[in-house]
Length: 81
Image (cartoon, rainbow, N blue to C red; front, side, top):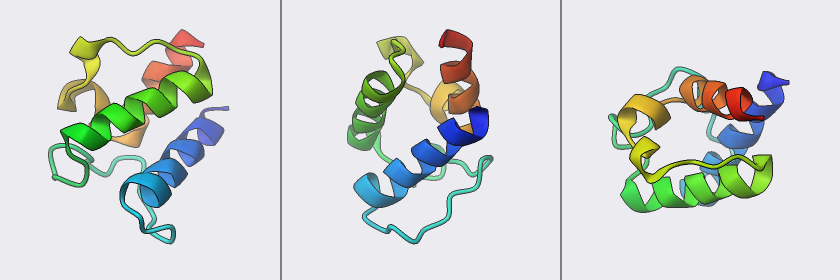
């Protein structure tokens, strides 16, 4: 189940945010702290998570401690499903 979440997140980030559909994003690859995604993209990602997985992301969670890699984000989503 978590593999499906991670795959969906990686696909969304690569295709919609980075506009690089063939980019492979590793589960532990830094997203925010590396500058791969910015604050505007972070909002898009949060909306995608809420719409796709039906979980609520608090504004205070939109930071590198919670959202910095796919593994962290997948854990957060899975814990709320």
